[in-house]
Amino acid sequence: MITITANVRAGVLGRDVMARAIGRGIDSGLRVFEHHLKTVTLRGSRPAAGLFRRGGRGNTLAVGTSSARSSIESHTFKVANRFVGVIGSPLAYVAHHEYGGTIRGRPWLKIPTVFHDRYANAPGFFQRSKKGNLFFFAKAGRRQRTLRVRGEKKSRAVSASGLIPVFMLVRKVTHRPRGMFKATEAATRNDVARVMRDEILNARAA
Image (spheres, rainbow, N blue to C red):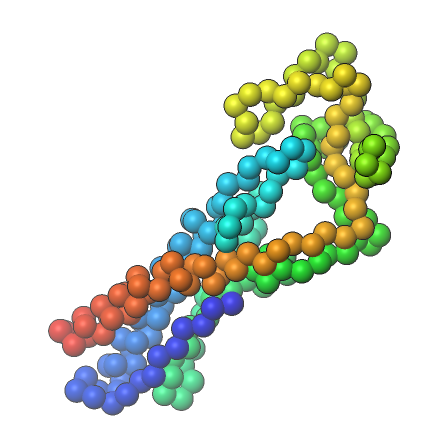
């Protein structure tokens, strides 16, 4: 969660006029922040790394659905002589990616592979890989020689066994902290200050 604060002081405009201008300025600043967060930070690319897709590079998060973006909420409050603007998400997994941490299964966590979208409902069986990881495998068609992966230009060849790893089961997963909100704050700091300043200047010019 990110917080923006500003104090209301009596001056040449009068306290009420200044308060309204500051309130509008914080609202405008929150909209700038929210737009960057939704269109840049939460739209990171999802490059495939072998069987799995990473969650995004650097401070970005590649989201598969719109739930993270639509969960972003912003509010402006007036407390005594201070305006406070806050923006954040109530979703636990957004906070988890922001600050990092470990998620534990009950008893398992399902980690989809790059083939999951196509074979999620295909019949198959569980089997451990050579490294001891527990996978669910589907069987490729008799004449199927290649597999298409969303986002990749070239098809992948079907393994000699004809088995397609659909997802892996693990006991826990640890994510690094991405600092998405912190990075967005740094990227939009000047623009947020500009729109807040413009509201004050417009009020003075009126």
